Figure 1 (cartoon, rainbow, N blue to C red):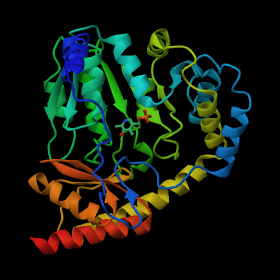
Figure 2 (cartoon, rainbow, N blue to C red):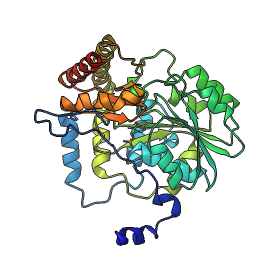
Figure 3 (cartoon, protein in one colour):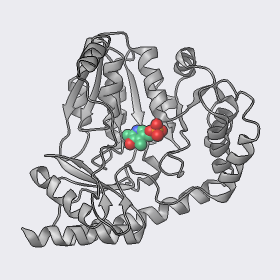
Length: 363
Ligand SMILES: *Cc1c(COP(=O)(O)O)cnc(C)c1O
């Protein structure tokens, strides 16, 4: 114990008591039947055989360093999305790009503004960068872009907007975002985190990739972790002004995007957009079934634009999560706020529905 305390003295003071990022899944505990992990918004399906083979092929030359900054993959993404090559950067996860952007743009003490509750990684990355996180509450489970605008001060260097928002599953409107970008000082960078963009079916969903060509202070983050079934491979990318992309590269460590990850992404791209969209369509169909069935049990379920649903259960969150655990399903419980449940296979989702029914009948 004294060792632990002594060790901590070496840490930067603000890191000593910092919350660490954890997937913090509820555990199905002593449950003996099949278990399902619906706590991390992963795809329930493995990547295709072609992707697996491409990774195996890359593994055979893994005695060689990869492309230093993943330029080949960035070029491929630019081509597929009709973007200029110098507007795209890649990294081992979109979180890496978020960290690079904060490092490149914000100095210690600068304000980074974001809505809350949102993605748990934001306050941690902001704090590690020695910046000042400033948060604005959600309104009706939604990022309130007008409120964000009101909290921009001369000290604000970065605004992070997560749309659709994790964990509340709602998105912001394109009009709202455009008005926000138009009114914002151009010295302030907006990072639009579109990790779940592929799952949005709303009519007013912002077109981040189009908007970053109009606003040179907009950086759009995308990932292969969710819609491309590649959370374990670690690949994210971003699009923004060439100056920002150059700045990300300036702070990036060389060779951190592995050859295996690049190969997985390139193979996923080579399968064409229809394979992503059919996969996403089946998740959306399943999502709508899950939402409807949970609503039938009397639960409030906000419209989801993602591959998960949000149950704003407040003080009853732990109880719902316990019902899921009893059926072998781990979910993400934010005690006192709500429960986030990833869309899984139909049989996993049936168990969530059953948990909802049991939960409802108990009240
Ligand atoms: C899952 C997720 C990501 C993905 O991060 P990667 O590092 O690309 O796996 C980014 N942002 C949000 C809000 C997420 O939920």
